[in-house]
Amino acid sequence: MIKFILFSVIVGWIICSPTLLLFRVLHAETPPIKPWFKKAVLLKSYQQSFDWLTPWDKREIRTQSGMALVVNLPLSKKSETSKKADKKTLYLLTTAEMVADATLIEVTRKDIRQPFQAKLVLMDYAANLALLNIENSNFWDGLNPIKWSPVKNKSKVDAIDVYSFKIKSAHKWEIESGTIQLMTVGHRRVSDAWFPILKLNGFSKARQGYPLLQENEAVGMILETDKRKAIPTQMLLEFLEHAGKATYNSLAHRGFSWRELPQPSTADYFKIPPALPGIWISRVLPYGTGSEVLKHGDYLTKIGKWRLSHDAIIEHPEWGHSLFDLLFLDQLKVGDPLDLDIIRDGEAMILHTKVSAYKDDGRTVPLKRVGYTPRYLIQGGFLFQELTANYLSMWGANWRSRAPVRLRLFLEKNKTVLMGNNLNDESELQSAKSAQRFVLVTQVIPDQINIGYQKLSNAIVQQINGQEIRRLKDVEEAFLNPDKGFHRIDFLPGSDRLSAVLPVEGLNQSNQRIKSNFRIPKLQSY
Image 1: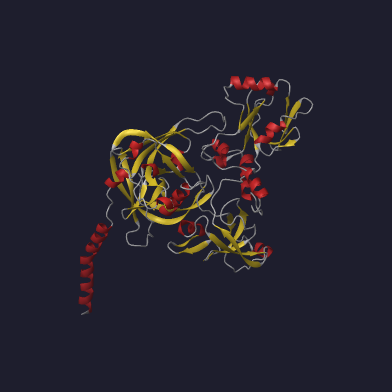
Image 2: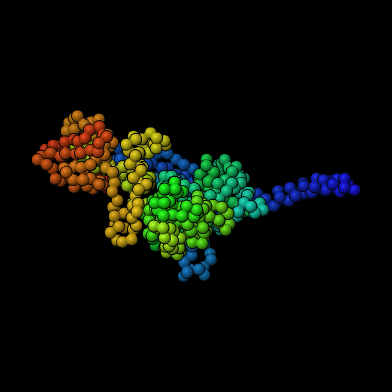
């Protein structure tokens, strides 16, 4: 009898399994592609960045191909009654990397061969998002904005299956399938920003700006093909909401760096109970959530209603165990009131603050910036520039290991920016806007006035004519006050030389010779 029952179960499973498999295949139906001809367009950008070694020149033009998605900004309260998409309210959404430093942006519709020129309206380089507009109203005829849906947790039936496009030509679009690996927090290193992202499996042809589809709904946009990353709907909608306001704010972001307690003596010094779960605030940023109230050495145990583990993990209501930054996906938005539970000097307290956004302010060595002209000044062939990540990137993709060590070490200063200080008053806010920079002589452009100095490069400037140099503007001011007919430039120890001297007499003539001989449009730019 038992054998018969076991045999029946096995036979039943064999018979039912194909049916269940067929049901799953039918349920996970590939989305139709035709409707997307009216929601997505092909994008080609011609990009030309500045050459930061010779900052008055530009590098060779490079091209990128991807996609842009038709979107509209959230309706204002006055226009909520009108549900019909107006041409004037439609824009194109793509990645910032697609259009950064672009001299020309071409957009092609599936049904119109003629390309249109797009113009950049807004770019959030930290979030890797950009908004484009096309002035030719004919382009928008028949196009419809995407209706976004929140991405579903992969634990739900068929939610793991996602799709995007595989475009072989302007007229041959196909669907490509993949899966969700996990929802996590990604670190965008060029801007030192932490935002929620989706990690994907299976995609090989989907490029930047392509839509991510789940159960035939748009749930995100592909950011990086080779790394298979996408930004989820919730972050895209936050970007569009902020873009529709008079003053744009970036996405919600943490306002501090953290570490696990390095050793028991640190806990003893800051009077932190050793068994209490939480994270140690190692640095307060000049922006972001908590930056106005936290201090270096605080021990953060709770963000809102979410308790923190020793490794900054919280229990997200949708995605489970996650890094606390995932709360900025859908639980915490810019402007929301927020309580932070901390231990400070051995006392438990609750700090009241608001969720705030990422900003690119206050760093001693500015991170990569796009859309800005390099700042420089030339005196007697000495090329003065501020140390930036853009300049360091001239040593190639591996500049973090190839750039001169003494310059890379100054990046460590970014890790102590405003440590222990909070931007609570006007003077401190002004200080953040005019943060100290490192000024260096990047090279000496050959001229008779600078013979003997022409091998000097990447020398950090300490003083000029006795005046301390804290930013590029100080260089111009210092050259107005020569000492006994000479300009003396003092460098930080470790440079090729400790000082250089230029005569006042003949300096203006030298500047004009250099400008003419090397075809430099301007001797200064800032």
